Image: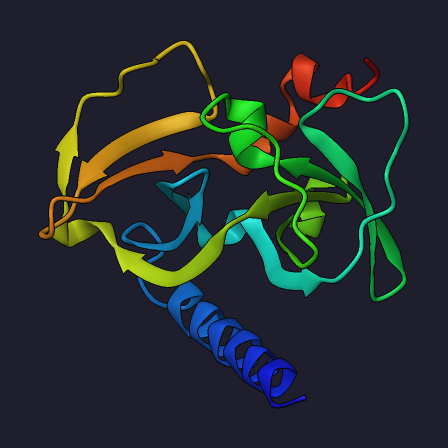
Length: 170
């Protein structure tokens, strides 16, 4: 019980920080998260929220990276294991799944399984590095922070428009 209270407090604080950051300089404040053991960034306007669900309903005959559907406050979200989709790690199926929900303005109830939400990151203090794969329209930029951690910025909106993303049938 205490653990879920802590998670609820974390989600509340993160939502408050996201709202505050959105009103400031949105170009430098990004949401940081870990997926597949790698560090990622996305613009705040790309994200609806980060939630934890205890169960996903499996969908038969789908690609390995499509891990099922989840109900979040009465809405059904298609859930993609982000790391598996990007080819950086095999699809995981933990009992408790942390989902990054795409912004509702995209018109898709899409959720991405992530390992951990890290909160806001300021890219103004990071060093830009060249992109390795410039053929993927959802990869926007790469940075290295002061601790030597490499971050890749991803555009969820571009990922949702990718033809391979919407074809989940195996």
